[in-house]
Image (cartoon, rainbow, N blue to C red; front, side):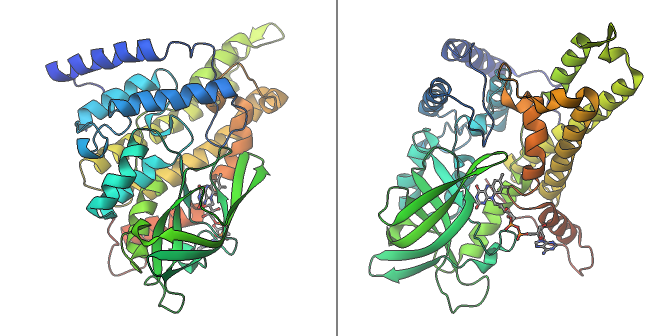
Length: 404
Ligand SMILES: Cc1cc2nc3c(=O)[nH]c(=O)nc-3n(C[C@H](O)[C@H](O)[C@H](O)COP(=O)(O)OP(=O)(O)OC[C@H]3O[C@@H](n4cnc5c(N)ncnc54)[C@H](O)[C@@H]3O)c2cc1C
């Protein structure tokens, strides 16, 4: 599992050249743009349109989901090709999985694994071509960690399900084309045997979306009021939703992995080289250098965990506890980095800087750290999964599900 030292094979170096040239051509016009972060509201129309167009162009070539089968809109390529695409795009500060605001990166693999053939042919191509925005819709007001308590009901009525209930803390500031929604398909059924997943068109009658302006950006409440959804859109089978959820959650809880590194520390170094206190650059201060060293070390560990998980995922050998380990560590590092930034630069760390990409905006790092501890499950969920996977206090170790 060596991502850096090994030279490209002949085939891969030809592909890298092709990708580089393609990006040079297609990233033209982005020079003046500064990417906003996932739940941000700072992005403007120009940035949004650029990102949507870029996703479509990548999607047309199958490059948004390079390893997915061609018949569903992927490119049928290998993990080496995917690594090339991820690393080359990363030079532009964009992550292949999040070119624009959609959670297709999690939803598409779940549908690929659990969908019937006709569902894959219908649902996957628009997602893989970057044409639709998909939200994941799991959390409910009574609790997010214990999603098996799902109370949003979907009751079969002829060739439709009728959905009623409420979700919370979902989505982005742009409206969704589809809601990938966990529902209760059998309200009187036993726990874990009463769930299902519906791929619900966002414009269905009876859906109300209410934005919530939070410290880190916009999330939404979604209300379902007698929403009729074709039975065809139930993925993975009625009352089988818990097994589908396991695949979904493994990806969301760190199992999907990531290739790009967090560029924060480079910007901190730059800042400390330029910023002077009493005529001396901050970088000369040994206590500040110590803080930066801690950041650097921890971010390297995060990077290696993320790459390791990426590799395990794509060779279809899920790391037993790698997802939860990565998620827990990454989020704690982010929180610690927010505190470190304040120690290094004081109030400067609380002032937004629109001239940089938001992920390296110190103010955003400070502001988003606490919220990130809950997004996609809390730290306690990470600890719980970790403990189960290594068999703490249990006679057996829980296995990680395979994803795609
Ligand atoms: C930025 C952000 C983005 C999000 N995006 C989405 C999204 O796109 N889609 C979506 O569906 N949801 C989303 N969520 C919701 C998120 O998944 C939930 O917040 C999360 O699952 C926790 O649920 P909760 O907030 O209801 O907390 P609760 O589950 O009510 O937990 C409350 C507290 O109890 C602790 N706790 C709970 N259970 C246990 C246990 N068994 N053992 C020990 N401690 C426990 C928790 O750690 C926490 O401290 C997002 C949240 C945030 C903050």
